[in-house]
Length: 440
Image 1 (cartoon, helix red, strand yellow):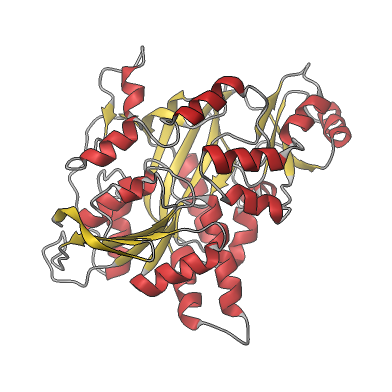
Image 2 (tube, one colour; image 1 turned 135 degrees about the vertical axis):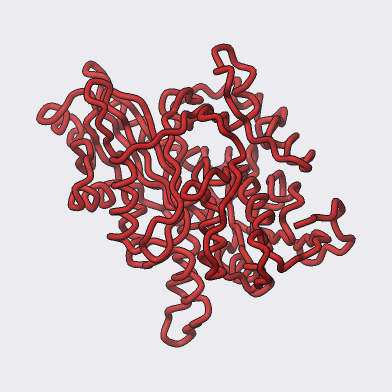
């Protein structure tokens, strides 16, 4: 799909419309209606913008809902319209975007947008104001809504996985530092504690045998959440944390036996409980000890695929999700540690059939056979951001998927918001305290 380089002059009520030229001739050569996709993201991640490029090239018409300042959605030419995602009323923001685009599917890019979709779903089910069109749209986009309680709880997800024969580390809920200390005495002194509702390795604390349970508990449940929420609003221009603080969101915590190994994960597209697109990777380099990967190695792993297929089938999932694993060094066994019910890298990379998640989505929406696709690379080493390429020790054959014809997005990826702002850098320089469980 050819995209005009200029934004239209008209901007009404915060809606920005790109002067795109739509087409209906698909990648297969057949005339089909262009599927309409709505991407939503309350963070400022680049993943959705990268996916939008692939969706547009496949023949989809893509719109987006995002914060109005500093989001990659606002600089990519692959997005037809962008709508403002307001922290003051996120549910109405989603309704407005749905009414403006009439999408065939909604794709959430972050955990909060998944939460907001389910809030909207609950409203749409209300017997006095029941909205069948929204009910059907969210069910088509996410699959069985009853799975939401499970996929957003680390403990419930792992318990369900264990019932399906998926290998998991020993995991239990803990409710206090004393509870954690007792669990460590009985199960494993070396462990990991994690708070629900956090992501990117934030809200995770790894404890050695000698570490204090009390100090770790204080770190993971840091009490000054209002201060953190204000910091996120002022420095990151992210008011969604303040909404969570005002709503007194509870974040259950689990303790998990530590597995000595290295991280791996998979990115999945499923449709009505069946896995149609699947990419598995091992982390070669991560941004910090519990943080996201910056360089990965594409792999084939039967245990990881089995886990993805069993979870998608058991929960009746549709759309994108990711699973995180630890591959034990001594045995090579894969342990499932958590799930992300949203976009995860490298979902945007169009590899061969079966590892082309964009093609799988297009085929599901159009009812057409999934097309063969020329992989964007033959390398099995992938860098997720351009900064990873300049680090020492980067593999020579490492491939970085630079968005062609997207100069503004390429600049955004090199210096993302808010990292490039002076205020953010000053706060990072002086703020060396522990990170709280709200994900700040």
